[in-house]
Amino acid sequence: MAPNAPAGVKGASFNQKFLAVLHLPGLQYVFDQRKHPLERVFWVLVILAAVRGMLFLGQYQYARYAANPTAIQMDKNYRDWIGIMPGLTFCFHDRIDWDRTRAYLERIQLTDRDAPREGLTANETTGSRYLAEFVHTLVGASATEPGNLSRFLDDHRLAIDVDVLELISAVHPNHDIAINSFQTAHGTLLQVQQIVTERGICYTLNAPLSFLQRVNATGREDTPEKHAPDRTPISCEFSKHHCYMKLDMYRSTVSYTIHSPYEVATSDQLFTNVEESDELVAVYSVLETVANERLKDLTVRQRNCFFYDEVYESLPFYSRNLCIMSCRAKRALAACRCRPHFYPFAEGPPCTVRGLYCLQQHPNWYSDVDCKCLKSCTDVGYYVASLSKTQWTAEGGIPFTHKASLRWEILQPKTRLRRVLIFSYEDLLVSFGGAVALFLGKNGFYLSKIVEFLTIEFCGW
Image (cartoon, rainbow, N blue to C red; front, side, top):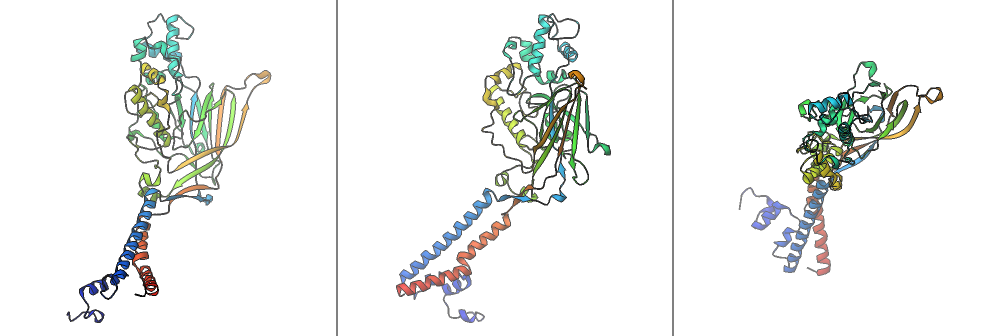
């Protein structure tokens, strides 16, 4: 016997010493030789049931943590918020400069079809009309309506050799645009970017991700991450400014859509027309979704969303619309071995006219049913609160001025949504400890005493 052994352990067997150190409720009855064998078997079953219950609770808590340990809460502390101005994508209806068109066709040696020496128009000789219709078709082509391409398939130079994105970018005219906003008084310059969308050549304002859709003078993609502009959208303090922006377009008609600055526009969105001499004033309410930074510690599967600045496949940033367009580009590549010119950021060789005609025969490439694109963790939604249109005309119905004006402003929101972490990894560890304590700790001790009482009371052991 050890001279320093505790008094309560002196004279005890090895099993008793071990159980005294382990302190596992009910286990001492299993090894107690004085107990009836059936009682000892009963205690074995009780202990196994306790261990099974502990494992069940542990698995349940882990499944909860792995599935989606987040929640969306309502935030109403609006006095400290800063408004985020929406992104704008607008497309001019006049997209062909015939002088530029002739210069471009001469450069690629396509003006030898009995075309006149003066500027190319749609009402000239048979050869020039043929080329004019070709240019019209490509400039007006969209992801859902590529136009009548079949008539150009037999012409090898048009069907194979022409770079579609280069052509529609080269023939696009210059438009007079004037921008005004609450920042103008502070000398801040707002930049309008020319991009290619699913509707063709358009322009964006306050949409940092639009650099992925930008083309240079030769129509090639210009999307390296080092060339990315400032990725922070324009913000506005409601307490200091009247948060508005205004766009004036001279001698032009446009279609536009308002969207989150963290997004890009697709042809699925609703575009509104603004005619010459129209003055359109739109007021938007805002519903913003913000996210706790701790959500970045979770996996994408756990939080079921992507952050704006996270890498997604080959893209340096993420947005749901970019994901959908990338999915459509992959389907087009699988169907016709080329990607449409609407997606300069996507991988694969660009589609020629023959490639676009192939896609026209596979309309399912545009479907996004199986794309499985997640939402963004942070987002801003804009909803029309009021919309007014005024057309300035002189007496006799003569237009007063050839200027289309679009003004949009946002109202200060009183609520917003916040994604928060409600079950962290630390909470998971604590829940494991609680499950152990419930069955094998002090609560388990009390449970064993209840079982002991019931066995003595009803079995007489």
